[in-house]
Length: 282
Image (cartoon, rainbow, N blue to C red; front, side, top):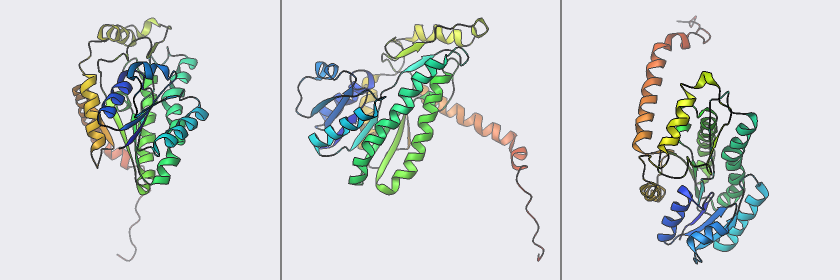
């Protein structure tokens, strides 16, 4: 039996992963700001520990990790799922809005990872799964600050993977596209109240798109959760896992664009090295 530690576990992807993990017979530490929201959803399950955790509170993260180990003996899989979005042009997004989303999506992820990693290092095993987004691979109109948090998650995760591999700990980033969750609801998305007319055709259009797309997204969250378990079950999980046809298409388009642009500017890029001096003995 494996033990999962999942943040943001009361709803959305987090709750669906909890359900699938429990169905497999695994133990789950399901964390949320209000643990009652977890027990209200899943009831009194012998393999479930509902723990209070605001990811912005590092002391609380350490307490939840200690409680997990005390109850189940170890933590095998950490799912850093807690997070939210902010919608608005980069200029429209206030400093307070930017700081809040970075605090949860980036600094909260780091705090929870710091709390759980000592237990994984002691066991010389474990798997950290960080929820990123297609917005962590490609920037989008109206999502610049949110994408910034997910680009940060990608960079942090790639570095963690290199640092933790010698210790037997795996790291994966998960990049969902648009799934039919509550992500575009007010509980998960901050829409900047600042609206600048110059962005009406760009970020303004995205605001309208997001409102119309809510609960009409192409991705099936239940299928996502089942596929998520399949990925974690693999003995050699990927460093980066895309979920959703829209994500796959966006990554392929971004890779093609980068390759084309690099080829176009390759000679200028290479021209900035110190010249290679000829060998006088040649």
